[in-house]
Figure 1 (cartoon, one colour):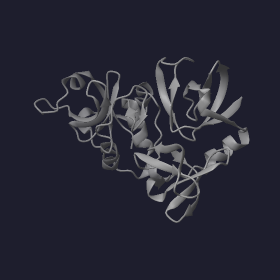
Figure 2: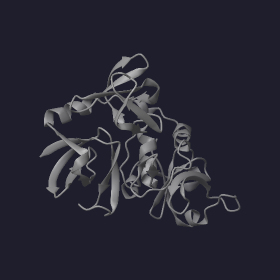
Figure 3: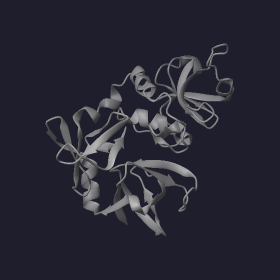
Length: 265
């Protein structure tokens, strides 16, 4: 087995080893993966949560097993802004891939003035502004109130819908949920069919901010008992909608297709 990391800011994870097959998900800069096999210009990779798909080999850099394991222990921060610029040691010039997206997990080694030094799995480095990062708190998943999750999700209002999307460049429904929850150290499965198994089942009239509501092939985050925030293909991306008839932003299809609600926190 080989090990590698992602060298661009965002790369598609495909269901099949061919361009424009179904997008399963995406991977972010610096993310480490295991490489299972090769097919032409693609590599079958496994993410750290065992999610599998095909990646264009041009955006993978092979590393050793020891570097793969070492790097996973060093991750201590993530990008908290929609985008963060990457700079060289002069702090003036950007370096490829020039910016990285919200949610990108990082190994911050040192701080220089208003910049932080980022180390990649192959020990190369870049710099980004300290204001762009947030620390990873291992205990955060035990203390997060639901309204904070909603506040984080609201940052992405207007982001377009993208099947398989996990970033502010485009989210699908479960990608938005996973990205928002992971900001607080809560790592949910990638797909709706697996997220519906997380947490505990609650009654619809018990729903409060931060709960997850599941519909037919769809998931949303509760803002209140009647309002949800979600990324919807039919709704044009990340929007807030009501499940209460008569409201201006009422979504009758979601109301009728409701399956269950679950409390993760």
